[in-house]
Image (cartoon, rainbow over all chains, first blue to last red; front, side):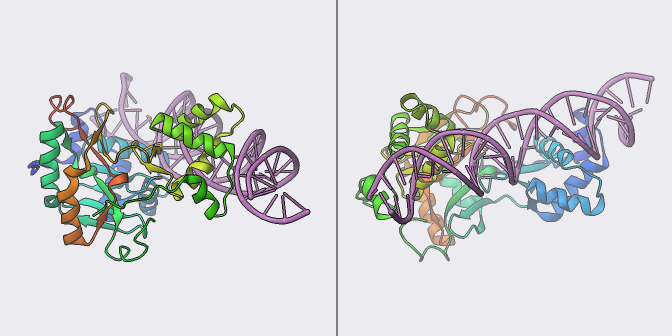
Length: 149
Length: 149
DNA sequence: GTCTATGCAAACCATTTGCAGAATA
DNA sequence: TATTCTGCAAATGGTTTGCATAGAC
């Protein structure tokens, strides 16, 4: 249902094509995400400042927004309070977050095929699996307190 | 997988049992949610202040948190920035939010049965459908820009 | 009368913005 | 050289907290 080949155009070209410039800060932000796999703006900023202590948090925010717009990184809302950015180099996966222990489990998109097809037929709704976050209880927390969290 | 009968104990009793007190503010907050169906803390506060202009926003926040803890209201994150509280008197439904126009569509939980069963088997993960929010494109926005948002 | 809940104001935290100077194309 | 970007600092907006008083039990 997806398998968009995504030619993975080098991000440098994509930037240029949209009239943006290549700056060391942008490269550092992208590197940080690829290195971390995923992280909050704050975490990404910390990673960036290892190599370039002068880079400002607001610059990180601005570049994360831009890179997301260009598809060079991906944003999901794992927690209520903070956005999380993901590297697009990671294989596609859906996030299962345990509302009890906070653990995040990755699930294969194939588990969602039926759902995606169903919603497309019944509601004409095209699910964006990349940003989907499913809350619930993980295998470890399930036995405890069958009632509510 | 769900179908917990939920005796719907009157919220007054539940409060008492947990050592909390019955206050007009709490009742107003609960009434506001039932009346609105759902709303942000801000919206709920506005609704409350119609009848009791003196009620403070922080009181609304405190009571929303308490009522959620007791299961008298339900919280989901429809948008990234603000939490939304739902009345538990509404029939269960899953929220489909369009990332393009912001519209929110309600889906029947039955559409998710296969997914819920699948994740339970493969990951031992018990999905909490009440809080699930599925992003994507609604029927109206689907035709536009097949690429990305 | 005791102890919880409220109102108020200040604190917080993540995120955004205005602006002058630095850097890219 | 013409703009775009950055760093800085201040503003913003939602949410939380400390404290004295009002109110429920």
